[in-house]
Amino acid sequence: MNEFEAAKAKAAAAYNAAADYFDHPVSSFWHRFGRRTVERLGLRAGETVLDVCCGSGGSALPAAEAVGAQGKVVAVDLAERLVALGKTKAREKGLGNIEFEAADMLSLGYPDASFDVVVCVFGIFFVPDMVAATRELWRMVRPNGRLAITTWGPELFEPANAAFWEAIRDERPDLLRGFNPWERISTPAGLREMLAEAGIGEAEIVAEAGSHPIRSPDDWWLIAMGSGYRGTLTQLDGATLARVRERNLALLERCEAITTNVLYSVAVR
Image 1 (cartoon, rainbow, N blue to C red):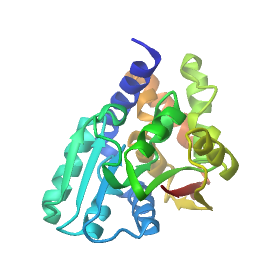
Image 2: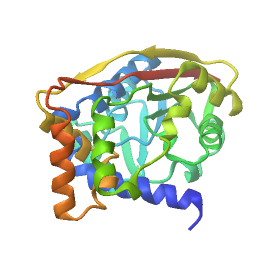
Image 3: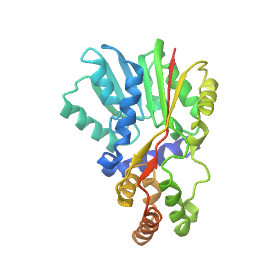
């Protein structure tokens, strides 16, 4: 298995495992930032949208509402269980203009200039080559269309993130990660550089500082179980998982919020 295939399998496994907690109310930020991404695009009735790394529809569902019955949204994600959640929500909302599909954003097979808008929220950093992935998304944008890439800003989920990895270090230091891929693009300068390497000369980039309240350390654990951290947690046996949870939560006894800084970028082709 090459590097790309390994990264793809790892991301799919983590988020399929996380699907049972992904839409828990404590993790409402997925949908909040998805909706904000769509609001910044100013979608028009009748437009066609491709949403990659769509999760359970945080940006795809509001996009479908915005483009109306004459428009269309294609929403894809590697995690089949998240796609299933999105399909259910679209059906419950009566949205007949959206298609959810379990697929790889780099091998969709659409011709050049297939969509008015392409969206990727918290997903571009899951591929080993973000520049190549961005170039592929840009290829599918029509002239005068838009590409929206939303990613995490600095200090993601702190102080809970540091507490999580400290707890992992105590039990399974072999699972520690030396680098989070989104860190390269967690500042406007870093994101702009990556976009430029992908052939996008101009983009509007907005950095938004934020925090997400947690009522107790248990809220953080639910967030971890419903996010990419689940990929690490699934590698622990039951006893180790219990110790990691206890240690992680003990370090957050006085924590009332976690950092959720975000970068929004929109480029017009």
